[in-house]
Image (cartoon, rainbow, N blue to C red):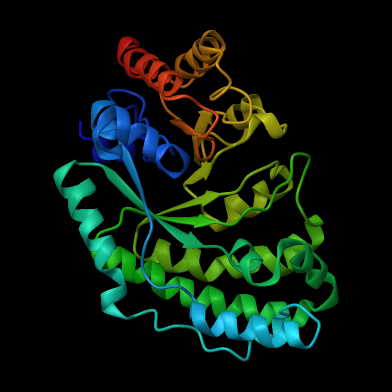
Length: 328
Protein backbone atom coordinates (compact mmCIF):
# COMPACT_ATOMS: atom_id res chain seq x y z
CA UNK A 1 0.00 0.00 0.00
CA UNK A 2 1.03 3.60 -0.53
CA UNK A 3 0.60 6.00 2.35
CA UNK A 4 -2.46 7.44 0.64
CA UNK A 5 -4.01 4.01 0.25
CA UNK A 6 -3.12 3.11 3.82
CA UNK A 7 -4.81 6.16 5.34
CA UNK A 8 -7.88 5.84 3.14
CA UNK A 9 -8.28 2.21 4.16
CA UNK A 10 -8.15 3.23 7.81
CA UNK A 11 -10.77 5.95 7.29
CA UNK A 12 -13.04 3.41 5.58
CA UNK A 13 -12.76 1.28 8.75
CA UNK A 14 -10.71 -1.33 6.94
CA UNK A 15 -7.49 -2.78 8.35
CA UNK A 16 -4.50 -1.46 6.39
CA UNK A 17 -1.27 -3.39 5.94
CA UNK A 18 0.17 -1.43 8.87
CA UNK A 19 -0.60 1.57 11.06
CA UNK A 20 -0.15 4.93 9.26
CA UNK A 21 2.58 7.15 10.73
CA UNK A 22 3.29 10.85 10.65
CA UNK A 23 5.01 13.50 12.78
CA UNK A 24 4.90 17.28 13.11
CA UNK A 25 8.70 17.63 13.17
CA UNK A 26 9.46 20.64 10.96
CA UNK A 27 8.36 23.63 13.01
CA UNK A 28 10.96 23.55 15.80
CA UNK A 29 13.52 20.97 14.66
CA UNK A 30 14.08 21.95 11.03
CA UNK A 31 17.66 23.16 11.52
CA UNK A 32 18.72 20.15 13.57
CA UNK A 33 17.15 17.72 11.13
CA UNK A 34 18.82 19.47 8.21
CA UNK A 35 22.23 19.24 9.89
CA UNK A 36 21.78 15.50 10.41
CA UNK A 37 19.73 14.51 7.37
CA UNK A 38 20.23 17.26 4.83
CA UNK A 39 16.52 18.13 4.73
CA UNK A 40 13.25 17.49 6.54
CA UNK A 41 12.06 15.74 3.38
CA UNK A 42 14.92 13.25 3.66
CA UNK A 43 13.94 12.53 7.28
CA UNK A 44 10.31 12.00 6.23
CA UNK A 45 11.41 9.69 3.42
CA UNK A 46 13.63 7.65 5.72
CA UNK A 47 10.76 6.93 8.09
CA UNK A 48 8.24 6.54 5.25
CA UNK A 49 5.70 9.00 6.56
CA UNK A 50 2.23 8.29 5.21
CA UNK A 51 0.81 11.80 5.33
CA UNK A 52 1.83 15.37 4.62
CA UNK A 53 0.44 18.41 6.42
CA UNK A 54 0.32 21.28 3.92
CA UNK A 55 0.08 25.02 4.47
CA UNK A 56 -0.66 27.64 1.86
CA UNK A 57 -3.26 29.55 -0.05
CA UNK A 58 -4.60 33.03 0.68
CA UNK A 59 -4.96 34.59 4.11
CA UNK A 60 -8.47 35.68 5.11
CA UNK A 61 -7.46 39.32 5.57
CA UNK A 62 -4.71 41.48 4.12
CA UNK A 63 -1.81 41.66 6.59
CA UNK A 64 -1.27 45.31 5.70
CA UNK A 65 -4.91 46.19 6.37
CA UNK A 66 -4.90 44.36 9.70
CA UNK A 67 -1.72 46.17 10.75
CA UNK A 68 -3.25 49.52 9.80
CA UNK A 69 -6.42 48.66 11.73
CA UNK A 70 -4.40 47.62 14.79
CA UNK A 71 -2.46 50.91 14.70
CA UNK A 72 -5.69 52.88 14.35
CA UNK A 73 -7.26 51.10 17.33
CA UNK A 74 -4.10 51.61 19.39
CA UNK A 75 -4.32 55.37 18.80
CA UNK A 76 -7.82 55.13 20.29
CA UNK A 77 -6.45 53.27 23.30
CA UNK A 78 -8.12 49.95 22.55
CA UNK A 79 -7.69 46.62 20.82
CA UNK A 80 -9.33 45.37 17.64
CA UNK A 81 -12.96 44.42 18.28
CA UNK A 82 -15.30 42.26 16.17
CA UNK A 83 -17.10 45.25 14.65
CA UNK A 84 -13.73 46.51 13.38
CA UNK A 85 -13.11 43.34 11.41
CA UNK A 86 -16.54 43.68 9.84
CA UNK A 87 -15.24 46.88 8.30
CA UNK A 88 -12.48 45.01 6.44
CA UNK A 89 -13.01 43.09 3.23
CA UNK A 90 -11.98 39.46 3.19
CA UNK A 91 -9.29 38.61 0.66
CA UNK A 92 -9.97 37.07 -2.73
CA UNK A 93 -10.17 33.38 -1.88
CA UNK A 94 -10.14 32.49 -5.59
CA UNK A 95 -6.86 34.24 -6.41
CA UNK A 96 -5.09 31.48 -8.33
CA UNK A 97 -1.52 32.61 -7.70
CA UNK A 98 -1.93 32.24 -3.93
CA UNK A 99 -2.34 28.47 -4.39
CA UNK A 100 0.93 27.92 -6.27
CA UNK A 101 2.86 26.57 -3.28
CA UNK A 102 0.03 24.11 -2.57
CA UNK A 103 0.14 22.88 -6.14
CA UNK A 104 3.86 22.21 -5.83
CA UNK A 105 3.46 20.46 -2.46
CA UNK A 106 0.67 18.24 -3.79
CA UNK A 107 2.87 17.25 -6.71
CA UNK A 108 5.78 16.45 -4.41
CA UNK A 109 4.04 14.67 -1.54
CA UNK A 110 0.99 13.11 -3.13
CA UNK A 111 2.03 12.44 -6.71
CA UNK A 112 5.75 11.70 -6.18
CA UNK A 113 5.63 10.18 -2.68
CA UNK A 114 2.15 8.63 -2.66
CA UNK A 115 1.20 10.30 0.60
CA UNK A 116 -2.18 11.37 1.92
CA UNK A 117 -2.15 15.17 1.91
CA UNK A 118 -4.22 17.40 4.13
CA UNK A 119 -4.31 21.20 4.22
CA UNK A 120 -4.42 23.54 7.21
CA UNK A 121 -7.70 25.46 7.23
CA UNK A 122 -8.73 28.28 9.59
CA UNK A 123 -11.33 27.47 12.22
CA UNK A 124 -13.66 30.27 13.22
CA UNK A 125 -12.35 30.64 16.78
CA UNK A 126 -8.60 30.11 16.49
CA UNK A 127 -8.35 32.14 13.28
CA UNK A 128 -9.38 35.30 15.12
CA UNK A 129 -7.09 35.00 18.13
CA UNK A 130 -4.33 36.64 16.13
CA UNK A 131 -6.50 39.71 15.51
CA UNK A 132 -8.08 40.04 18.95
CA UNK A 133 -5.67 38.27 21.29
CA UNK A 134 -7.05 35.17 22.96
CA UNK A 135 -7.91 36.89 26.25
CA UNK A 136 -9.85 39.61 24.47
CA UNK A 137 -11.48 37.04 22.21
CA UNK A 138 -12.79 35.05 25.16
CA UNK A 139 -14.16 38.27 26.64
CA UNK A 140 -15.77 39.25 23.33
CA UNK A 141 -17.75 36.00 23.32
CA UNK A 142 -19.71 37.51 26.21
CA UNK A 143 -19.58 41.20 25.27
CA UNK A 144 -20.19 41.10 21.51
CA UNK A 145 -21.88 37.80 20.59
CA UNK A 146 -23.90 39.27 17.72
CA UNK A 147 -20.87 40.93 16.14
CA UNK A 148 -18.90 37.71 16.50
CA UNK A 149 -21.67 35.74 14.82
CA UNK A 150 -21.33 38.03 11.83
CA UNK A 151 -17.51 37.75 11.85
CA UNK A 152 -17.65 33.97 12.14
CA UNK A 153 -20.30 33.65 9.43
CA UNK A 154 -18.14 35.58 6.96
CA UNK A 155 -15.12 33.49 7.86
CA UNK A 156 -17.06 30.25 7.49
CA UNK A 157 -18.27 31.22 4.01
CA UNK A 158 -14.72 32.17 2.98
CA UNK A 159 -13.28 28.95 4.42
CA UNK A 160 -15.86 26.79 2.64
CA UNK A 161 -14.76 28.32 -0.66
CA UNK A 162 -11.12 27.84 0.30
CA UNK A 163 -11.83 24.18 1.05
CA UNK A 164 -13.48 23.70 -2.33
CA UNK A 165 -10.52 25.30 -4.09
CA UNK A 166 -8.13 22.98 -2.24
CA UNK A 167 -10.21 19.95 -3.15
CA UNK A 168 -10.12 21.06 -6.77
CA UNK A 169 -6.32 20.89 -6.55
CA UNK A 170 -6.48 17.30 -5.30
CA UNK A 171 -6.16 17.69 -1.52
CA UNK A 172 -7.28 14.52 0.27
CA UNK A 173 -8.53 16.07 3.52
CA UNK A 174 -9.51 19.49 4.82
CA UNK A 175 -7.91 19.97 8.23
CA UNK A 176 -9.64 22.57 10.42
CA UNK A 177 -7.41 24.00 13.14
CA UNK A 178 -9.56 25.48 15.91
CA UNK A 179 -8.18 25.16 19.44
CA UNK A 180 -11.13 24.79 21.79
CA UNK A 181 -9.60 23.14 24.83
CA UNK A 182 -7.56 23.84 27.93
CA UNK A 183 -5.93 21.14 30.01
CA UNK A 184 -9.17 20.63 31.96
CA UNK A 185 -12.00 21.40 29.57
CA UNK A 186 -13.24 23.84 26.97
CA UNK A 187 -11.94 27.40 26.95
CA UNK A 188 -15.57 28.55 27.06
CA UNK A 189 -18.81 27.17 28.38
CA UNK A 190 -20.49 24.35 26.45
CA UNK A 191 -23.44 26.70 25.94
CA UNK A 192 -21.24 29.35 24.31
CA UNK A 193 -19.57 26.70 22.18
CA UNK A 194 -22.93 25.35 21.04
CA UNK A 195 -24.39 28.77 20.31
CA UNK A 196 -21.48 30.64 18.73
CA UNK A 197 -18.74 28.32 17.52
CA UNK A 198 -20.05 24.89 16.51
CA UNK A 199 -22.76 26.22 14.14
CA UNK A 200 -20.18 28.13 12.11
CA UNK A 201 -18.28 24.94 11.32
CA UNK A 202 -21.35 23.58 9.54
CA UNK A 203 -20.83 25.42 6.21
CA UNK A 204 -17.29 24.06 5.86
CA UNK A 205 -18.37 20.56 6.85
CA UNK A 206 -21.25 20.66 4.35
CA UNK A 207 -18.96 21.83 1.55
CA UNK A 208 -16.43 19.06 2.22
CA UNK A 209 -19.02 16.32 2.57
CA UNK A 210 -20.77 17.44 -0.62
CA UNK A 211 -17.51 16.73 -2.41
CA UNK A 212 -17.21 13.29 -0.81
CA UNK A 213 -13.96 14.33 0.88
CA UNK A 214 -12.59 13.90 4.39
CA UNK A 215 -12.69 16.48 7.18
CA UNK A 216 -10.39 16.55 10.20
CA UNK A 217 -10.13 18.67 13.33
CA UNK A 218 -7.16 19.85 15.32
CA UNK A 219 -7.85 21.10 18.83
CA UNK A 220 -5.49 21.01 21.78
CA UNK A 221 -6.72 20.23 25.25
CA UNK A 222 -9.71 18.44 26.70
CA UNK A 223 -12.60 18.80 24.25
CA UNK A 224 -14.82 16.08 25.69
CA UNK A 225 -17.87 18.41 25.94
CA UNK A 226 -17.55 19.08 22.19
CA UNK A 227 -17.51 15.45 21.06
CA UNK A 228 -21.22 15.34 20.20
CA UNK A 229 -20.76 18.37 17.94
CA UNK A 230 -17.76 16.66 16.34
CA UNK A 231 -19.99 13.69 15.55
CA UNK A 232 -22.77 15.93 14.20
CA UNK A 233 -20.34 17.81 11.96
CA UNK A 234 -18.94 14.57 10.57
CA UNK A 235 -15.24 14.95 11.30
CA UNK A 236 -13.45 11.83 10.10
CA UNK A 237 -10.26 12.48 12.09
CA UNK A 238 -9.65 14.18 15.43
CA UNK A 239 -6.15 15.36 16.34
CA UNK A 240 -4.68 14.84 18.87
CA UNK A 241 -7.12 13.22 21.42
CA UNK A 242 -4.93 14.50 24.22
CA UNK A 243 -4.54 11.94 26.98
CA UNK A 244 -2.36 14.36 28.96
CA UNK A 245 -5.43 16.64 29.17
CA UNK A 246 -7.65 13.88 30.54
CA UNK A 247 -9.04 12.34 27.34
CA UNK A 248 -8.47 8.62 27.76
CA UNK A 249 -8.16 6.22 24.86
CA UNK A 250 -10.56 4.00 26.79
CA UNK A 251 -13.26 6.61 26.18
CA UNK A 252 -12.39 6.73 22.48
CA UNK A 253 -12.41 2.96 22.10
CA UNK A 254 -15.64 2.57 24.03
CA UNK A 255 -17.71 5.37 22.51
CA UNK A 256 -16.23 6.88 19.36
CA UNK A 257 -13.94 4.49 17.49
CA UNK A 258 -16.74 3.50 15.12
CA UNK A 259 -17.44 7.14 14.21
CA UNK A 260 -14.05 8.75 13.63
CA UNK A 261 -10.32 8.03 13.80
CA UNK A 262 -7.69 9.65 15.98
CA UNK A 263 -4.42 11.10 14.79
CA UNK A 264 -1.94 11.39 17.64
CA UNK A 265 -0.57 9.23 20.42
CA UNK A 266 3.01 10.56 20.60
CA UNK A 267 2.40 13.16 23.30
CA UNK A 268 4.83 16.09 23.18
CA UNK A 269 3.78 17.17 26.69
CA UNK A 270 4.64 13.93 28.42
CA UNK A 271 6.39 11.35 26.24
CA UNK A 272 8.42 12.72 23.32
CA UNK A 273 11.17 15.21 24.05
CA UNK A 274 11.96 14.29 27.66
CA UNK A 275 14.96 12.03 27.12
CA UNK A 276 13.19 8.90 28.33
CA UNK A 277 13.25 6.57 25.35
CA UNK A 278 12.27 3.59 27.51
CA UNK A 279 9.04 5.32 28.46
CA UNK A 280 8.45 6.22 24.82
CA UNK A 281 8.88 2.60 23.75
CA UNK A 282 6.63 1.36 26.54
CA UNK A 283 3.81 3.88 26.02
CA UNK A 284 3.85 3.99 22.23
CA UNK A 285 4.40 0.25 21.93
CA UNK A 286 1.23 -0.31 23.93
CA UNK A 287 -0.72 2.07 21.66
CA UNK A 288 0.55 0.41 18.50
CA UNK A 289 -0.51 -2.97 19.81
CA UNK A 290 -3.88 -1.67 20.99
CA UNK A 291 -4.80 -0.07 17.64
CA UNK A 292 -3.05 -2.41 15.25
CA UNK A 293 -6.33 -3.24 13.51
CA UNK A 294 -7.34 0.39 13.01
CA UNK A 295 -8.58 3.61 14.55
CA UNK A 296 -5.25 5.41 15.01
CA UNK A 297 -2.92 7.37 12.76
CA UNK A 298 0.20 7.41 14.91
CA UNK A 299 1.42 11.01 15.01
CA UNK A 300 2.80 13.60 17.38
CA UNK A 301 0.14 15.43 19.36
CA UNK A 302 1.56 18.76 18.21
CA UNK A 303 4.81 20.21 16.90
CA UNK A 304 7.73 18.38 18.51
CA UNK A 305 9.28 20.93 20.86
CA UNK A 306 12.83 22.22 20.56
CA UNK A 307 13.95 20.52 23.79
CA UNK A 308 13.74 17.20 21.94
CA UNK A 309 17.20 16.24 20.74
CA UNK A 310 17.74 14.89 17.25
CA UNK A 311 19.15 11.72 18.82
CA UNK A 312 15.92 11.20 20.75
CA UNK A 313 13.83 12.01 17.70
CA UNK A 314 15.71 9.42 15.66
CA UNK A 315 15.52 6.78 18.38
CA UNK A 316 11.79 7.35 18.75
CA UNK A 317 11.02 7.07 15.06
CA UNK A 318 13.42 4.12 14.69
CA UNK A 319 11.24 2.33 17.24
CA UNK A 320 7.99 3.35 15.55
CA UNK A 321 9.29 2.34 12.13
CA UNK A 322 10.14 -1.16 13.32
CA UNK A 323 7.19 -1.67 15.63
CA UNK A 324 4.41 -0.86 13.17
CA UNK A 325 5.98 -3.35 10.76
CA UNK A 326 6.59 -6.03 13.37
CA UNK A 327 2.99 -6.56 14.39
CA UNK A 328 0.72 -8.44 11.98
